[in-house]
Image 1: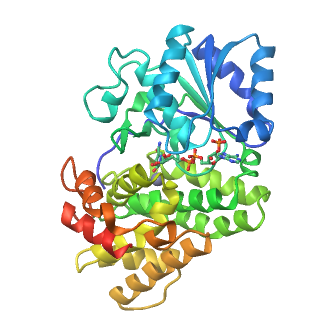
Image 2: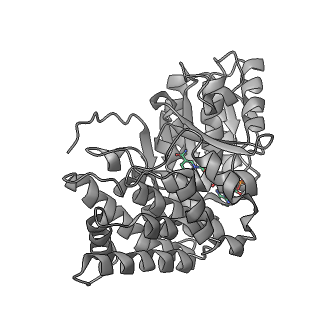
Length: 387
Ligand code: NZQ
Ligand code: ZN
């Protein structure tokens, strides 16, 4: 097991009716709030009204930034930074899914920075003393509610790039599973796929001996397996929504990578290139790509890990490691299909016209992956197999 530092600062307010408990947390960190949200789902579900009523009752000054899109754009980030500067806002409250939270992290980093916020995404600027941020999560998927990562898209350059810093971790996150009852089937399936995919990314490293992390990761995979379909079948199943929500948060708050390399992440980097050009839902892209990545990288050296997952998560019985691994990969594909996710790029009307560009851009900073290092030619082959 590798050495690590455990330091996850976000306070989690989990369960029904926890919203008002965010007020002391906000007041501890700021006086003037940017309230940021997406395209209106929080208004339909009454959450916008509940949040604004609480802020007003406490006499907390706030300004609103609305319309943050899925695959959040740098334009929304710039708009948020300008609002914070104009009104001297000193705290950001993100109410929504991963896209809203990610945009808010980039805003938090951008307010004290003199240059353009896109600089963070291209490695030209480092995050320094960002504004504090809190979240009210409405979609179980990204884990952004308890990590320091953000992924932002740029329509002008057709790029989608990650950035991150521990100081961007939200100071609190309200996780009320009832807020996710209204998430539709597509986004519920994509969310469960994303959670499962984060677990795959963290699980598939060459490390041996990090049994605690491996076993916890397998437990979270089984949670997705059990509760993903239940949430699809019955959107207001509290137990299903609650377990998915907590699994999503735990999957990507850092805990699952303690004692090992911080994950493979090749599939995520490839997916980001697909959604940068085609504005595809993140989870749908992962559902298409992950089983193809698995089949592509499977070899003598890493087969034990695929076989271990197949047996411990998908109850595969085969004695031979390669046979178990292949059955496990087939089970992953079947699971994503059962969540209503596409299996091929053609299913989401993507053809082969930009494969070389996507492969080249995915490797712009060098080879991808930890389990197996992938060059642009490997990435292009995985994309071809996904057509
Ligand atoms: O915009 P609104 O109206 O809020 O609607 C959203 C959006 O259309 C809707 N939605 C959210 N909560 C809802 C709801 N609809 C009804 N009821 C609710 N309670 O769902 C749609 C998708 O929302 P979005 O925030 O885009 O989804 P998600 O949470 O899956 O976030 C995806 C983004 O996060 C990035 C992805 O690349 C993508 O850009 N990721 C961020 C990560 C991170 N920060 O750690 C890691 C991930 O791997 C991922 O890359
Ligand atoms: Zn993801």
